[in-house]
Image (cartoon, rainbow, N blue to C red):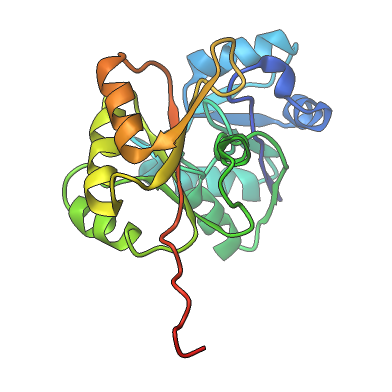
Length: 229
């Protein structure tokens, strides 16, 4: 009984690992966030393993049946549209259910968008916190106030439709002069990283229509030395 968590490229199809291709070929079933999107990747690598949909809109209903299939001997691999499943993508519920049922879970190493964005930012990365997507409505201001007090580098995901708003709010809550970096289209042809203060980045992406998926990296609050030290 085993569930494989298989990362897929966030952009360039060549970022797929040899091991990931082998696991997907040998599996009995692939659970995909969007089978139409994943079919492009599978076709590229000659993977003919059957696929079923497993996404945020049906995962609550399908977890139990998937667990039963795995218990019956179906070697299953979970993929998302891009990157590592369960990182701001479906996957956590299934992994938790498998762990609770004593099913072995193995996550392969591989692509995830925030790591190259963090490294490219030029901001300290010896300590960082991954925030994923901020709440869109309820709890958003509370989260922004909490982020203002973080002393380590922060990493957030954002869509092109909200990136300018999010940068503007981060500037308001964390300070307009806080250093940050915004990466988009990671590993794709039009990959870009823009660095500057939060105010500068908010202006940049307000005046230039943002495209692609975004990773925002923000410097932590300065830790002032203790005057008594």
